[in-house]
Every structure is written in C-alpha cells, then in structure tokens.
Image 1 (cartoon, rainbow, N blue to C red):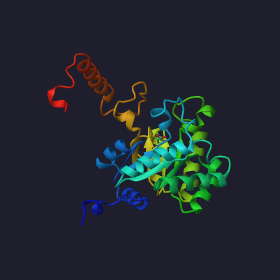
Image 2 (cartoon, protein in one colour):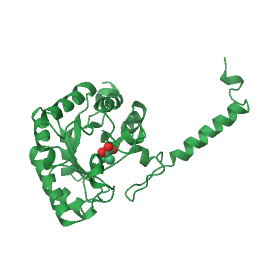
Image 3 (cartoon, rainbow, N blue to C red):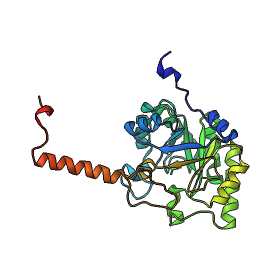
Image 4 (cartoon, helix red, strand yellow):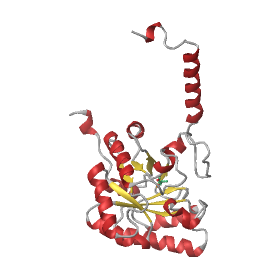
Length: 271
Ligand code: KIV
C-alpha cells in the first residue's frame, strides 16, 4: 500500500465524531500551495481558504474587495497541496447575499473549479435562502456568526459582538437556524466566551471559535497571525507561536549584506 493511500482524509462526518468524543478541532487558514502543504503535513484538521486573503495576501483594509475568481485561485492552490485536512473555501462578499440562485452558482464554481470539500458563508436568517439552496445541491456549508468581517461597514468596528442580550439572542437563534438547515459546522468570531459555550453545548454540529473562548469545539486562527508574520494585528484572542516577521527580516538582511560584500555566492555556490 502506498503512503498516500494510508492518509485518512478528514470529512464533515469525522468532525462531528470528534465533537461527540470531545476531541477539539484545530483549523487554520492557508491561501497558497507551500503554506497549505506545511499546515496539512503538521496535522491540521481543517484548512480554511479564508477571504482574509484579502487582508493578508493582497493588503486590503477589509475582506470586501476579494473576488470569486481570486478565491478560486487561492482555493485551487490549497487543494493541490492538501492530502488530509478538510478544505473549506469562503464565499466572498457580494456572491451569495442578495440572490440564492447567484449564491448557488458561486458555490458550484468553488466546488467545481477548486475541488474543495465545503464552502463558508457569513450570516444567519438574512441569508437562509442562499444556505438552503446551496445545501440542496449537496454542497456542505460551514456557517459564520458573531463578528462577520464582510459586514464591517454595518458595524463600523471590529469590537466584540453579542455583548448585549438582544444580539446574543439573535446569534443563538441564527446558530439554531443554520444547524436546522443542515450546516455541518459553525464558526463563531469574537463573542463572549460564555455565549460561545452556551451555543457549542446546545448544538450537535461542531462550533469552531476565533475569539469565542475555550468552551467551543475547536479553534481557528489566521496562519499569518499565528506565525507572527502580520505585526500590527494583536487582538486579545491571538496567541502568536512565532515571530516570523523578525526571522524573515533577519534572513533577508543577512542575504543583502552577503550580496553587497560579495560573500555570496562563494566558490561552492557557483558552476
Ligand atoms: O477569512 C477568515 O480567515 C475567516 C476566519 C477568521 C474564521 O473567516
């Protein structure tokens, strides 16, 4: 048997089994082949091709400008690399909110052109028609509630969501709605830990948090934040596991110096 055929691919079913047995789900973003290979080989459960690519890859202020074609480009690169993890691709802003037919055709393009395993959408009751239509085509959906960066112009701030009772109640009812519709998991972003736990305890599907506390079924971070490549962004929920920005700048600085001093290339580094 080849090594490749021994790899057991993570499925949506496997994620629900993990929740059942209390095993936490580890999810990270990736947007390109090289990073996705590393993250997958390290054993991550879910790779998210997030629309945060708009920020960390393209340098936009928000996630709004990224297009469906650009998400597909990132998705194709990631899927080509990943052998084990479940790959989820974000549907970008403007491709699913207004019209459920357009939502379905956006989701179908992602599934056909990237060969990803699922799509992720932001929102609850407002987008339930789109959710139902996409699910009816057999496309698995990961929901996304709480802070929804595609709605940043509505909120006006990236602060913690659902601190007030009315918003917390709406969030709980949206989470129920997404589960009843048939979503296989939900991401909860930047909400009080207590609320995250209430929702994770109530829902049967896995609830994956980013700034939603430790009481949920798994965690997700943006890989560039975790590795310390992004330097300005430091919300309370972010644990940095490396200071790669300093290491990269140090390595590049050494290279520049070696070129300038003619130390590089040396005798052994040429033909
Ligand atoms: O786009 C993204 O990276 C996300 C995560 C923050 C959950 O949606």
